[in-house]
Amino acid sequence: MIIESSAPTRVDLAGGTIDIWPLYLFHPGAATVNFAISLRAHCRIETRDDDRIILESRDRKVAFETELAAIEDLIHEERLELISKLVHFFKPQTGFHLIADSQAPAGAGLAGSSALNIACIGALNHLVGNRYPESKFITIAANVETTVIRVPAGFQDYYSALYGGTSCIHFRIDGIEREILETDMATLEKRLAICYTGEPRLSGTNNWEITKNHIDGQPELFALFDDIRDSALKMREALLAGDWERVRDTMRDSYPTRKRLAPNVTTPQMERLVEKALHSGAEAAKVCGAGGGGCIAFFCEEGRRQEVESALLAEEGVEILDWKPDGQGLIVHES
Image (cartoon, rainbow, N blue to C red; front, side, top):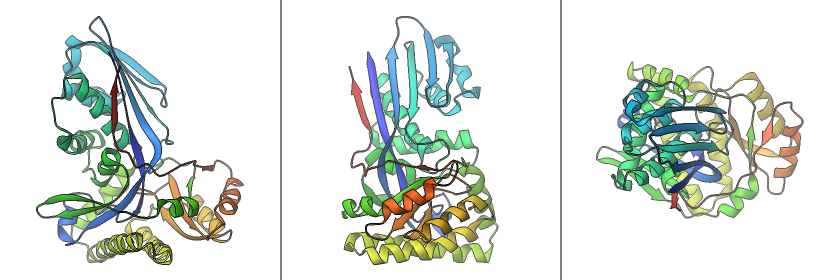
């Protein structure tokens, strides 16, 4: 049996970091806005006739094997730690070869690990006979990833991976709710350039420092998170209205707020790229994910996306991502 699954990565337009429990509980109306993109994480499982388990990551070029009898030991395995912990959780009863691969660059800030998490959950759950309903996938993903990064995980990334499309995720006392946003994605695609800086980042580190300071009650952080919430709600309204000037203004106004969250949200290289893009036809910049490297999304003047991309490509190590909006979430096939 061969099981193949995939899940999309995402670009977060507004509201990042406030999706971490319990931060959103202190800011009534907390929300995030993101959209799924076509750079997918893939998982392929092929069952075997013996008791061997082979775990492999194509993009990371790491592989190792063990046996079903040693599946309990995977809880402590540091190689391909996320995948190992997922296999330990599902505990398949047959040997198999799992191959993981991601189309997004490592440490891009596009929720690649969360997309891979959801893709692997979909495939492993199918392997064990669909033990869990899809409604449980996000809880499983967040709990397992938290044990890997060893700090609280945010929730918004799992929704884009599981459902795709453009979403506003609302964080309320009685739970988390995903709202589908019907908007003109063709225009956004024409005007949004996504630049990979060449500097990978580790979101858990940035977000944990911010979370600790927030829990410690820093007044400035409380005010910044109120601004983050408000920017997400403004972005939601602008996308629903197709008001691209308000989309631009919301991104532009949010950039300094994001930088004030922590000293390492942007790097000197990122600042140079932002300045260059703004001089070449970009109107606003958005650091993807927690920052500290990874990707930057640029909202460009109408008709000037290619000009912005050409200017950025002149910088060493920079990559312009070829992306499209992705209206599908998790896909699982068996053959």
